[in-house]
Length: 240
Image (cartoon, rainbow, N blue to C red; front, side, top):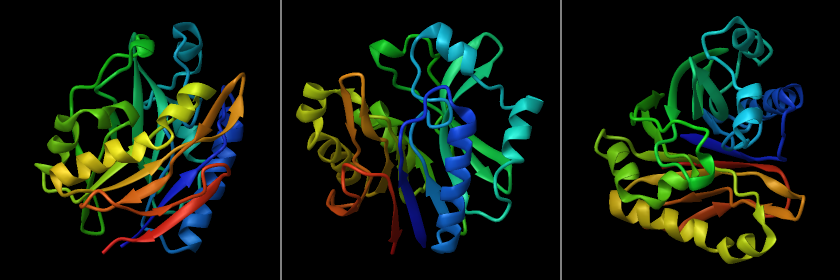
């Protein structure tokens, strides 16, 4: 199966800009023949961890507002996993939604939260999804530091783990972690026998820098495909 991951600029409080970029990437992935596409963590509104800012930008998946946003996406596109800030009642979630034909067919809420993500409520489910006979699950960024998060996906018969991430970090932290992200994710692959596809942002702002990586890792924990760290792009891979 052909799968794809986008390495993107970071959009913050700019849903129209992010939505336009998303629609373009979905069209590109369809042109490339991909059946599954992944975008970064918090892509739609930005990785926003200030409680007031996150709440101001959060979206209720059941709202007409969100339906109107979906209607702006191309109808003929791969199954697409994209990160966003979700509101449900008084709770906020760091969520990855699974979109097909302009409809949400599933969601995963980040279960392992960093100390700086106190505005979010942790998810408590590890759903898996099917596309053309391929079963996959999702771990969002920090989730992949915990063996049980990937194991819960593998135990449901999945063969692929998607990792939407946003590693926009202070420059020194980015330098320290530059080669660690794939190493940690490779451990999860070796433990579970899963393939892994990550999607991340790239660029710089306010003394921070993001270098991805957007990559494919095989069950032996080896990086078999990766985009350059310093520019947006679409990684397309034929998964055996």
